[in-house]
Structures are given as C-alpha cells and as structure tokens.
Length: 164
Image (cartoon, rainbow, N blue to C red; front, side, top):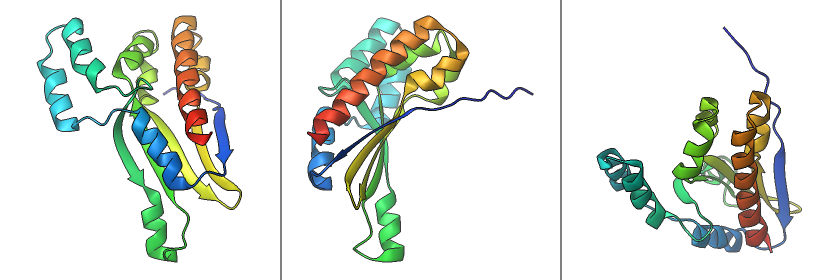
C-alpha cells in the first residue's frame, strides 16, 4: 500500500455579479454535448484522429465541455428554504488535454475532468478551481506539469471572464 500526500492550490475569484449572470457566462463558454451520444461516438472511434473529430466540435469557445453538474444549492434550499445560498459544482474538461497528462502521469485521470465551484456568499459570488498543476506536482513529470499549467491558465481565464 502506498499513500502519496497531494497538497492542492485553490484558485478563487469573487465577483459582485449575480449568480445567474456568472453561470450564464460559463454556460456560454463550454460545450454541452449529449453525454450518451458522446460515449457511443468515443467507443466507435477507431483511431485517435477519429476521436479528435468526435471531441473537437463538442468543445465550447473556452475549449471545454460539461460532463455533469451537481446543484448543491438545491439540496440546501430543501433544508433552509428559498433564501439558501446557491452552490453549483460543474465538472468540465477536454478529453484531449486529459490524455496528454495521463499518458505521462496515469493518476492525472483521478483529477480530470475538473470541478468548477460557483457559490454565493455574503461577500459575493465565488468561483473556485483546484489547480491541476498542484495535483500533479508530487509526481515530478515536467511534461505533464506543462500541460497542467496550460490547463490551469485556461480554466482560470474562463473563471476570470465570468467574474468580470
């Protein structure tokens, strides 16, 4: 049995923009594929080139697609009523980027796709993301780290754009 300690860096930005406006900005920047059709088409691809042809059109302007979302605020509202803060976890990614990291550090597949957390607090709407480079740093693979840093930059640009 092996245990690796992985310290995580969290990027967070706060905005005074309304939750709905922040969410709309993110939704406009990422693709929203039919995940059943996506899985079928990925399985049917017989080469990496065909896989790229399946994935690329599904990516939004920010270069990501949404895989799933968890409306945690809806759960809070059941316990605390309509005044409960909104909290949404959106899992986004780009399988082509994930593959670039996982070929060098297989554990990267534990961290990709990534989570965007959007939540209301008294000081504004927080947009948070755990940096991929911090997850992969303990593995010591510079090639995977370069890909992770580029991914971090893209995600952070998406969040900064949604907040501004």
